[in-house]
Image (tube, rainbow, N blue to C red; front, side):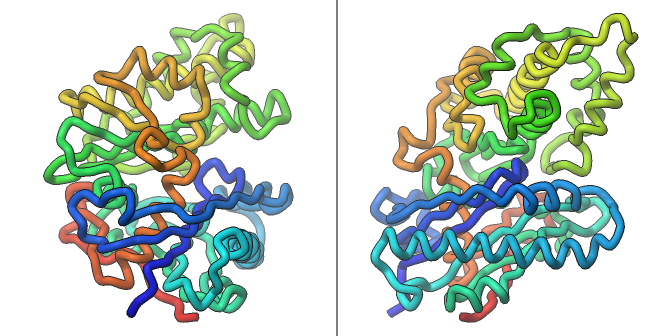
Length: 373
Protein backbone atom coordinates (compact mmCIF):
# COMPACT_ATOMS: atom_id res chain seq x y z
CA UNK A 1 0.00 0.00 0.00
CA UNK A 2 1.49 3.31 -1.09
CA UNK A 3 1.76 6.08 1.49
CA UNK A 4 -0.72 8.97 1.09
CA UNK A 5 1.71 11.43 2.71
CA UNK A 6 3.58 13.99 0.62
CA UNK A 7 5.64 17.09 1.38
CA UNK A 8 5.61 20.23 -0.76
CA UNK A 9 8.30 22.92 -0.63
CA UNK A 10 8.20 26.31 -2.30
CA UNK A 11 10.56 29.27 -2.43
CA UNK A 12 8.91 31.67 -4.83
CA UNK A 13 9.76 34.70 -6.92
CA UNK A 14 9.67 36.93 -3.84
CA UNK A 15 12.73 35.00 -2.56
CA UNK A 16 11.81 35.68 1.05
CA UNK A 17 11.77 32.17 2.45
CA UNK A 18 10.75 28.53 2.15
CA UNK A 19 7.17 27.44 2.80
CA UNK A 20 6.48 23.76 3.39
CA UNK A 21 3.49 21.55 4.04
CA UNK A 22 3.05 17.90 4.86
CA UNK A 23 -0.19 16.70 3.33
CA UNK A 24 -2.45 13.70 2.98
CA UNK A 25 -3.37 13.42 -0.70
CA UNK A 26 -5.92 11.13 -2.32
CA UNK A 27 -6.39 10.34 -6.04
CA UNK A 28 -4.70 12.93 -8.24
CA UNK A 29 -7.37 12.70 -10.91
CA UNK A 30 -10.29 13.47 -8.62
CA UNK A 31 -12.44 16.00 -10.53
CA UNK A 32 -13.21 18.02 -7.39
CA UNK A 33 -11.34 16.76 -4.38
CA UNK A 34 -13.12 17.10 -1.03
CA UNK A 35 -11.32 18.51 1.99
CA UNK A 36 -10.57 15.04 3.38
CA UNK A 37 -8.83 14.01 0.13
CA UNK A 38 -6.26 16.83 0.02
CA UNK A 39 -5.56 18.12 3.50
CA UNK A 40 -2.63 19.73 5.29
CA UNK A 41 -1.33 17.90 8.36
CA UNK A 42 1.59 20.22 9.16
CA UNK A 43 3.06 23.46 7.86
CA UNK A 44 6.38 25.22 8.43
CA UNK A 45 8.26 28.20 7.05
CA UNK A 46 11.86 29.28 7.23
CA UNK A 47 13.32 32.61 6.17
CA UNK A 48 16.20 32.35 3.73
CA UNK A 49 19.56 33.37 5.21
CA UNK A 50 20.32 36.95 4.19
CA UNK A 51 23.44 36.08 2.20
CA UNK A 52 21.68 33.25 0.36
CA UNK A 53 18.78 35.53 -0.54
CA UNK A 54 21.18 38.14 -1.87
CA UNK A 55 22.99 35.54 -3.93
CA UNK A 56 19.78 34.10 -5.39
CA UNK A 57 18.64 37.59 -6.39
CA UNK A 58 22.06 38.38 -7.86
CA UNK A 59 21.99 35.17 -9.90
CA UNK A 60 18.93 36.43 -11.76
CA UNK A 61 21.34 38.47 -13.89
CA UNK A 62 24.64 37.45 -15.54
CA UNK A 63 27.74 37.75 -13.36
CA UNK A 64 31.24 36.46 -12.82
CA UNK A 65 31.75 32.80 -11.94
CA UNK A 66 27.99 32.33 -11.94
CA UNK A 67 28.04 28.57 -12.63
CA UNK A 68 29.99 27.78 -9.47
CA UNK A 69 28.02 30.36 -7.49
CA UNK A 70 24.75 28.86 -8.71
CA UNK A 71 25.82 25.35 -7.70
CA UNK A 72 26.78 26.51 -4.21
CA UNK A 73 23.52 28.47 -3.83
CA UNK A 74 21.52 25.42 -4.93
CA UNK A 75 23.23 23.32 -2.26
CA UNK A 76 22.49 25.88 0.43
CA UNK A 77 18.87 26.12 -0.71
CA UNK A 78 18.54 22.31 -0.49
CA UNK A 79 19.89 22.47 3.06
CA UNK A 80 17.18 25.03 3.93
CA UNK A 81 14.61 22.71 2.38
CA UNK A 82 15.89 19.84 4.53
CA UNK A 83 15.46 21.90 7.69
CA UNK A 84 11.83 22.62 6.76
CA UNK A 85 11.26 18.91 6.10
CA UNK A 86 12.58 18.05 9.57
CA UNK A 87 10.27 20.63 11.13
CA UNK A 88 7.30 19.14 9.28
CA UNK A 89 8.14 15.62 10.44
CA UNK A 90 8.49 16.78 14.05
CA UNK A 91 5.21 18.64 13.91
CA UNK A 92 3.27 15.78 12.33
CA UNK A 93 4.82 12.92 14.31
CA UNK A 94 5.56 11.07 11.06
CA UNK A 95 8.93 9.65 10.04
CA UNK A 96 10.83 9.90 6.77
CA UNK A 97 9.72 6.35 5.95
CA UNK A 98 6.08 7.47 6.10
CA UNK A 99 6.52 10.04 3.30
CA UNK A 100 6.16 8.88 -0.27
CA UNK A 101 7.82 11.90 -1.90
CA UNK A 102 8.80 15.54 -1.54
CA UNK A 103 7.88 18.01 -4.27
CA UNK A 104 10.60 20.70 -4.36
CA UNK A 105 10.35 23.40 -7.00
CA UNK A 106 13.70 25.16 -6.54
CA UNK A 107 14.40 28.83 -7.21
CA UNK A 108 13.79 30.21 -10.68
CA UNK A 109 16.69 32.37 -11.87
CA UNK A 110 16.01 32.35 -15.63
CA UNK A 111 12.74 31.83 -17.44
CA UNK A 112 12.79 32.09 -21.24
CA UNK A 113 10.41 29.48 -22.67
CA UNK A 114 10.37 31.35 -25.98
CA UNK A 115 14.08 30.46 -26.22
CA UNK A 116 13.41 26.88 -25.11
CA UNK A 117 14.66 26.97 -21.53
CA UNK A 118 13.81 27.67 -17.93
CA UNK A 119 16.22 27.29 -15.03
CA UNK A 120 15.47 26.57 -11.38
CA UNK A 121 18.33 26.30 -8.89
CA UNK A 122 17.91 23.16 -6.84
CA UNK A 123 19.90 20.19 -5.54
CA UNK A 124 17.27 17.44 -5.37
CA UNK A 125 19.81 14.61 -4.98
CA UNK A 126 21.29 16.44 -2.00
CA UNK A 127 17.80 16.93 -0.54
CA UNK A 128 17.01 13.22 -0.97
CA UNK A 129 20.29 12.36 0.73
CA UNK A 130 19.69 14.78 3.60
CA UNK A 131 16.12 13.62 4.25
CA UNK A 132 16.14 9.98 3.08
CA UNK A 133 12.91 10.75 1.21
CA UNK A 134 12.32 10.54 -2.56
CA UNK A 135 12.27 13.97 -4.22
CA UNK A 136 10.37 15.11 -7.31
CA UNK A 137 11.92 18.20 -8.90
CA UNK A 138 12.47 19.89 -12.30
CA UNK A 139 8.76 20.39 -12.85
CA UNK A 140 8.90 22.80 -15.79
CA UNK A 141 11.29 21.46 -18.41
CA UNK A 142 9.19 18.60 -19.79
CA UNK A 143 6.46 21.06 -20.70
CA UNK A 144 8.96 23.50 -22.22
CA UNK A 145 10.36 20.66 -24.31
CA UNK A 146 6.81 20.12 -25.63
CA UNK A 147 6.66 23.75 -26.72
CA UNK A 148 4.93 25.07 -23.61
CA UNK A 149 5.62 27.89 -21.19
CA UNK A 150 6.38 25.53 -18.32
CA UNK A 151 4.24 27.87 -16.24
CA UNK A 152 2.10 28.36 -14.36
CA UNK A 153 2.28 24.91 -12.79
CA UNK A 154 -0.56 25.18 -10.29
CA UNK A 155 -3.83 25.34 -12.30
CA UNK A 156 -4.38 21.55 -12.34
CA UNK A 157 -3.95 21.54 -8.56
CA UNK A 158 -6.30 24.50 -8.16
CA UNK A 159 -8.95 22.57 -10.06
CA UNK A 160 -8.39 19.44 -7.96
CA UNK A 161 -8.59 21.33 -4.67
CA UNK A 162 -11.06 24.16 -5.36
CA UNK A 163 -13.30 22.53 -7.97
CA UNK A 164 -13.82 22.86 -11.71
CA UNK A 165 -16.72 25.30 -11.38
CA UNK A 166 -16.93 27.69 -14.31
CA UNK A 167 -17.13 31.24 -13.00
CA UNK A 168 -14.50 30.73 -10.30
CA UNK A 169 -10.86 31.79 -10.56
CA UNK A 170 -7.84 31.43 -8.29
CA UNK A 171 -5.46 34.39 -8.09
CA UNK A 172 -1.98 33.75 -6.72
CA UNK A 173 -0.35 36.97 -5.49
CA UNK A 174 3.27 35.95 -5.16
CA UNK A 175 6.20 37.78 -6.70
CA UNK A 176 4.36 37.33 -9.98
CA UNK A 177 0.57 37.23 -10.19
CA UNK A 178 -0.93 34.23 -11.93
CA UNK A 179 -4.55 33.46 -12.58
CA UNK A 180 -6.29 30.10 -12.88
CA UNK A 181 -9.63 30.18 -14.66
CA UNK A 182 -11.56 27.12 -13.55
CA UNK A 183 -13.89 25.27 -15.89
CA UNK A 184 -13.47 22.83 -18.75
CA UNK A 185 -10.79 23.24 -19.87
CA UNK A 186 -8.90 24.76 -16.96
CA UNK A 187 -6.83 27.73 -18.11
CA UNK A 188 -4.07 29.68 -16.41
CA UNK A 189 -1.48 32.36 -17.12
CA UNK A 190 0.69 35.03 -15.52
CA UNK A 191 -0.74 38.54 -15.48
CA UNK A 192 2.42 40.45 -14.49
CA UNK A 193 4.05 41.49 -11.21
CA UNK A 194 2.18 41.08 -7.93
CA UNK A 195 4.59 41.82 -5.08
CA UNK A 196 7.92 41.61 -6.88
CA UNK A 197 8.38 45.25 -7.90
CA UNK A 198 6.80 46.59 -4.71
CA UNK A 199 9.14 44.40 -2.63
CA UNK A 200 12.21 45.51 -4.58
CA UNK A 201 11.24 49.18 -4.27
CA UNK A 202 10.68 48.80 -0.51
CA UNK A 203 14.08 47.13 -0.18
CA UNK A 204 15.76 49.96 -2.06
CA UNK A 205 14.10 52.85 -0.19
CA UNK A 206 13.12 51.43 3.20
CA UNK A 207 15.76 48.76 3.63
CA UNK A 208 12.91 46.31 4.24
CA UNK A 209 12.10 43.18 2.21
CA UNK A 210 8.48 44.23 1.69
CA UNK A 211 5.91 46.93 2.44
CA UNK A 212 4.16 45.45 5.49
CA UNK A 213 0.36 45.45 4.98
CA UNK A 214 0.80 48.00 2.19
CA UNK A 215 1.17 50.82 4.72
CA UNK A 216 3.83 52.69 2.73
CA UNK A 217 1.85 52.47 -0.52
CA UNK A 218 -1.21 53.76 1.34
CA UNK A 219 0.68 56.96 2.18
CA UNK A 220 1.28 57.78 -1.47
CA UNK A 221 -0.76 58.69 -4.54
CA UNK A 222 -0.78 56.98 -7.91
CA UNK A 223 1.27 58.86 -10.52
CA UNK A 224 -0.93 58.58 -13.61
CA UNK A 225 1.78 59.25 -16.19
CA UNK A 226 4.09 56.66 -14.69
CA UNK A 227 1.22 54.19 -14.57
CA UNK A 228 0.58 54.75 -18.30
CA UNK A 229 4.25 54.06 -19.03
CA UNK A 230 4.21 50.87 -16.96
CA UNK A 231 1.01 49.67 -18.64
CA UNK A 232 2.53 50.24 -22.10
CA UNK A 233 4.84 47.23 -21.61
CA UNK A 234 4.24 45.08 -24.75
CA UNK A 235 4.25 41.77 -22.80
CA UNK A 236 1.03 42.80 -21.06
CA UNK A 237 -0.87 42.86 -24.37
CA UNK A 238 0.15 39.31 -25.33
CA UNK A 239 -2.66 36.77 -25.24
CA UNK A 240 -2.57 33.77 -22.91
CA UNK A 241 -0.90 31.37 -22.51
CA UNK A 242 2.03 33.37 -21.23
CA UNK A 243 4.42 33.57 -18.30
CA UNK A 244 7.03 35.98 -17.01
CA UNK A 245 9.43 36.71 -14.16
CA UNK A 246 12.43 38.74 -13.09
CA UNK A 247 13.93 38.41 -16.58
CA UNK A 248 11.51 41.16 -17.59
CA UNK A 249 9.99 42.84 -14.53
CA UNK A 250 13.12 43.90 -12.65
CA UNK A 251 14.24 47.09 -10.96
CA UNK A 252 16.18 47.85 -14.14
CA UNK A 253 12.89 47.71 -16.07
CA UNK A 254 11.27 50.03 -13.52
CA UNK A 255 14.21 52.44 -13.64
CA UNK A 256 13.93 52.55 -17.44
CA UNK A 257 10.25 53.46 -17.10
CA UNK A 258 11.05 56.18 -14.57
CA UNK A 259 13.71 57.56 -16.94
CA UNK A 260 10.96 58.29 -19.46
CA UNK A 261 9.58 60.94 -17.11
CA UNK A 262 10.97 64.49 -17.17
CA UNK A 263 13.14 65.08 -14.10
CA UNK A 264 10.81 67.78 -12.83
CA UNK A 265 7.81 65.42 -12.80
CA UNK A 266 9.39 62.30 -11.33
CA UNK A 267 7.36 61.08 -8.34
CA UNK A 268 8.81 60.62 -4.90
CA UNK A 269 9.44 57.02 -3.73
CA UNK A 270 6.18 56.81 -1.78
CA UNK A 271 4.14 57.73 -4.84
CA UNK A 272 6.10 55.21 -6.92
CA UNK A 273 5.10 52.52 -4.42
CA UNK A 274 1.46 53.55 -4.65
CA UNK A 275 1.72 53.46 -8.45
CA UNK A 276 3.28 49.98 -8.40
CA UNK A 277 0.38 48.72 -6.29
CA UNK A 278 -2.07 50.23 -8.76
CA UNK A 279 -0.06 48.66 -11.62
CA UNK A 280 -0.51 45.23 -10.02
CA UNK A 281 -4.25 45.81 -9.68
CA UNK A 282 -4.69 47.15 -13.21
CA UNK A 283 -2.77 44.35 -14.91
CA UNK A 284 -4.78 41.70 -13.04
CA UNK A 285 -8.09 43.41 -13.75
CA UNK A 286 -7.32 43.92 -17.44
CA UNK A 287 -6.21 40.31 -17.87
CA UNK A 288 -9.32 39.03 -16.15
CA UNK A 289 -11.65 41.21 -18.20
CA UNK A 290 -9.94 40.04 -21.39
CA UNK A 291 -9.60 36.34 -20.58
CA UNK A 292 -12.31 35.60 -17.99
CA UNK A 293 -15.03 38.28 -18.11
CA UNK A 294 -17.68 35.95 -16.66
CA UNK A 295 -15.81 35.35 -13.41
CA UNK A 296 -18.17 35.42 -10.41
CA UNK A 297 -15.71 34.58 -7.62
CA UNK A 298 -11.95 35.03 -7.21
CA UNK A 299 -10.04 33.13 -4.52
CA UNK A 300 -6.85 34.99 -3.60
CA UNK A 301 -3.73 33.37 -2.16
CA UNK A 302 -0.03 34.10 -1.76
CA UNK A 303 1.69 36.80 0.26
CA UNK A 304 -0.23 39.58 -1.46
CA UNK A 305 -3.47 38.23 0.00
CA UNK A 306 -2.16 39.43 3.39
CA UNK A 307 -1.83 43.01 2.11
CA UNK A 308 -5.14 44.73 3.02
CA UNK A 309 -4.45 47.76 0.82
CA UNK A 310 -3.88 45.56 -2.22
CA UNK A 311 -6.89 43.39 -1.43
CA UNK A 312 -9.18 46.41 -1.03
CA UNK A 313 -8.03 47.78 -4.38
CA UNK A 314 -8.61 44.40 -6.02
CA UNK A 315 -12.08 44.18 -4.46
CA UNK A 316 -13.01 47.39 -6.22
CA UNK A 317 -11.40 46.46 -9.55
CA UNK A 318 -12.27 42.80 -10.13
CA UNK A 319 -15.55 41.32 -11.32
CA UNK A 320 -17.45 39.18 -8.85
CA UNK A 321 -16.67 38.41 -5.22
CA UNK A 322 -13.08 38.48 -3.96
CA UNK A 323 -12.54 35.78 -1.33
CA UNK A 324 -9.56 33.92 0.10
CA UNK A 325 -8.43 30.32 -0.27
CA UNK A 326 -8.53 30.29 3.54
CA UNK A 327 -12.33 30.46 3.19
CA UNK A 328 -12.02 27.08 1.47
CA UNK A 329 -9.67 25.50 3.98
CA UNK A 330 -6.20 26.34 2.64
CA UNK A 331 -4.21 29.18 4.27
CA UNK A 332 -3.09 31.72 1.69
CA UNK A 333 0.62 31.14 2.42
CA UNK A 334 0.29 27.36 2.08
CA UNK A 335 -1.37 27.06 -1.33
CA UNK A 336 1.78 26.86 -3.45
CA UNK A 337 3.58 24.47 -1.11
CA UNK A 338 0.48 22.27 -1.09
CA UNK A 339 0.45 22.46 -4.88
CA UNK A 340 3.95 20.99 -5.04
CA UNK A 341 3.00 18.20 -2.65
CA UNK A 342 0.11 17.48 -5.04
CA UNK A 343 2.41 17.71 -8.07
CA UNK A 344 4.76 15.17 -6.46
CA UNK A 345 1.73 12.91 -5.99
CA UNK A 346 0.69 13.49 -9.60
CA UNK A 347 4.18 12.52 -10.77
CA UNK A 348 4.44 9.25 -8.87
CA UNK A 349 0.90 8.26 -9.90
CA UNK A 350 1.48 9.16 -13.56
CA UNK A 351 -1.07 11.96 -13.75
CA UNK A 352 -0.28 14.59 -16.45
CA UNK A 353 -0.54 17.88 -14.55
CA UNK A 354 0.95 20.13 -17.26
CA UNK A 355 -2.09 21.16 -19.28
CA UNK A 356 -1.86 22.43 -22.90
CA UNK A 357 -4.71 24.90 -22.32
CA UNK A 358 -2.55 26.48 -19.59
CA UNK A 359 0.97 26.34 -21.03
CA UNK A 360 0.39 26.17 -24.78
CA UNK A 361 2.34 22.91 -25.09
CA UNK A 362 1.64 20.45 -27.89
CA UNK A 363 0.31 17.87 -25.43
CA UNK A 364 -0.19 17.22 -21.72
CA UNK A 365 2.80 15.87 -19.82
CA UNK A 366 3.79 14.49 -16.43
CA UNK A 367 5.68 17.17 -14.52
CA UNK A 368 8.95 16.49 -12.74
CA UNK A 369 11.80 14.03 -12.38
CA UNK A 370 12.18 11.57 -9.49
CA UNK A 371 15.26 11.30 -7.27
CA UNK A 372 14.88 8.13 -5.17
CA UNK A 373 15.44 8.17 -1.41
